[in-house]
Amino acid sequence: MDLQQHVRRTGIVLRPDPRRVLLRKLDLGSRERTVKIISRVLAESEEAVERTWQEVCRDFNQRHRNAADFFQHRFEQLREYLPSDRRIDRTRQLLIGAYFSLEYTVESAALFNPSMVWHPDQSGLPAGHRRFVLSLRATGEGHISSVAFRSGTVDEKCWITVNEPSGYVTSPKVAPDAFYEKRLFRSKLFELGLWNSFCSEVLDELGDRFTLSQLASVVNTSDEQHRQQNQDFHRLGHEILELARSNYAVQYQPTSDLSERLLFPYGPTETNGIEDARFVRFVDDDQQVTYYGTFSAYDGQVVLPQLIETADFLHFRISTLNGSEVGNKGFALFPRKIRDRYYMLSRQDGENLYIMSSDLLHFWHRKQLLARPAYEWEFVQLGNCGSPIETDRGWLVLTHGVGPVRTYGIGAFLLDLEKPTRIIGRLKQPLLLANETERNGYVPNVVYSCGSVVHNGHLILPYAMSDESSSIAVVTLDPLLDAIERDGLP
Image (cartoon, one colour):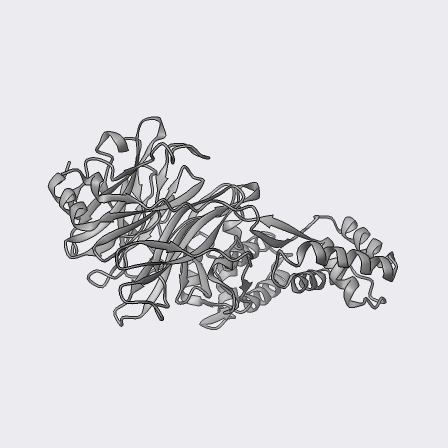
């Protein structure tokens, strides 16, 4: 049986669009320059200010929702540079805010490495149709990556429609009072080797749950008390706050379209990008649904896995993953517990595929080698292409392998449902390789996915093409599972 006859490329292509721009703050890094620019605007006549402001409105109001609100917020952030004795009218405030803002093209370079999950809202659809959420790695200026979203539907015959994105992009509001659990925070400080009497003193002043502002207040007070005795406490206080800022919550307006929402780097571990989010629809023991997304946070030097949690794709919580076995890339969570434990795939050494288990979602201390490169098309590297998918014949795991001339292929495993450390079978040949229309791009000869779904007996497989754009393939499920079982183990 030729498995390729059961693989259908849909012809859908999601390309990066440089017209999708985000307003961000312009920080000149110089108090002197900041004061000079504000002084120039304050010296302008009312007529000149009004004329310039109308030009800003003409050029940017159609490109952003509520641009004036962003400019007003930027003005408020600059109050320390303003003369205290000067009353500033609203138009001049908005113009000052505009001078300290910029547009950032979020997907000018690439829109790739997609992950698909079923949408939390399945209302209003015809029988046999399902609505999905597609997350993508959007890469823009400076090669900084963020998480973008699209939505669409799959009908009863597995024909796929991807909705046109809104013309706007918005960043979320960072929740100022996200709570931290003292027990988990203490464990992370121990793990990082930061725990000492200063940390103990700080946490003793806080309740079992505390906010960032409460933590900052206690850290600053303790720092002032000990600075003359121990300068290292000042550095330690900074590191405590950096850890807290890596765990935060964000929210969007319910009126915003899903395609307008963007998870842009915010925490200190993410300054150079949020990469390759692998989303999974997780069902807990009480049948409650949470969407988890594991991603690689990059600060320009170190890559660390982190976790996104959401129930509605409006409110998100971002947190660090902790434990001795948290490192490298490619973490993918199973969609439910197995024998009361969480399971996750990973690739800590950059070459082999591992499986991990834990009693706690945020802490991982155990790993086990699951598979090594075995076939010619994966000799360089073996990893996963998203979270395992439960079927009645086992956990279906899509993999990526790297072969000659850095050519990527997508393969597949089957794992035992109750003992996921046991491989049932494994494809000898790739399920998907880049064809002639897909192999040219930012990184040639690459096909890659971060998560798929099953619908009406078919695997819906979104995949990136050469690290530049994305498409979707549909694979008949039973022939795929038959081929995996037939090929067996290497």
